[in-house]
Image (cartoon, rainbow, N blue to C red; front, side):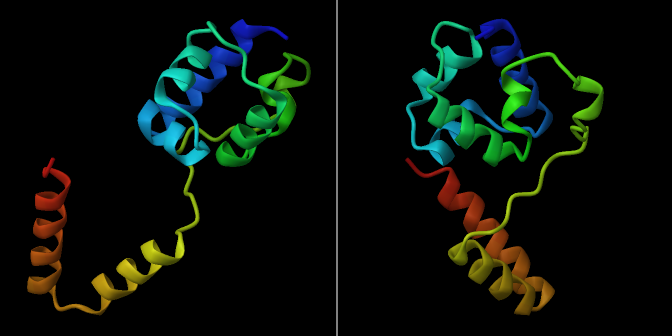
Length: 117
């Protein structure tokens, strides 16, 4: 397997979607350091992980493996939109049901929580 292609594409997809390595690794249930090593070409992910990455980024499995038919593989330059989990959807529904002043309070509280250790 050509690690050069693999790690370049992993980094490109992650950066294009404005994801951190920590975010992607948490979504795939792997360590951040492990994911970092994939992007740097120091480790090669298993085929299961490559399949998970293809599903996560909504690209063909072969996108990570070869350079054939790249013209046929359409990878949008716009960020991908992941489906919301059930708790995320509940939060979004709650947010949308609030009046504007309460939405701002909810956002302020979310930022406060995000900055807590």
